[in-house]
Length: 277
Image (cartoon, rainbow, N blue to C red; front, top):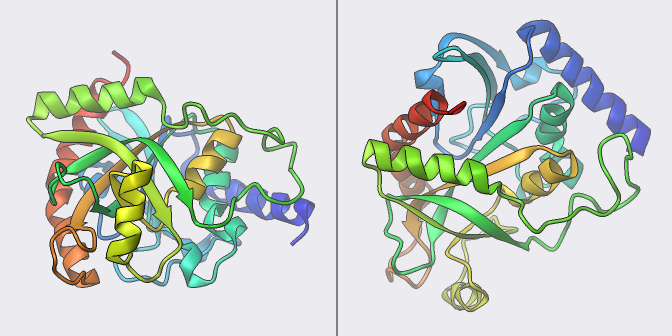
């Protein structure tokens, strides 16, 4: 797809959503595998399936609902994208980051990316939420490769602070208020769809990774390209290969992520309550 065709596809999706939602939400959230916590705290929710949105990629992985939910938390308008498409599904990087491009063109200023991941750091137990402080792009691809669309952002993008320190602080404070024991660390994105080998986990640990997954990083890069303030939350749904000595099962990952929904919902509820403070 040409650069102009990509731009026009994003514009069509954006215009469709603007017609449905009216005012521009202050915050957008992308929910990962098995996660639906924000849906449960929204009032006056309107739902739109991805298939209804022009050009919008539709997830084919279990645990990703594939719908947009628009509503309010207290009085704050929020737009939630439940589910994402992945690079390992055979999607291009343009498709993987299409949702983020639409979020940027909607005029949303703040984005929270969530995912389910495997814990590498032995101090980070399964069943905790990790605030992403930084990331390692181990996908072998970058979503900004190819001709740059200047209407979206600059050719070269600074990555010194991808995950905004102010948003991270607000999430930490929300966690403390709710009594949720958060951790903070580095997220590594691998291409998948296989889970990592114990040797790969040892390699990632050597590089400084605290958790590993198969998403989020391309979206984070594109968010920064478009000037969006970004935070990331990783649900540590399993222990990475070789850490526990047990095989990893996707059903168990989804089950663990579902159990984390309550904590994630409380955390985000408090985050929104104190957003303007």
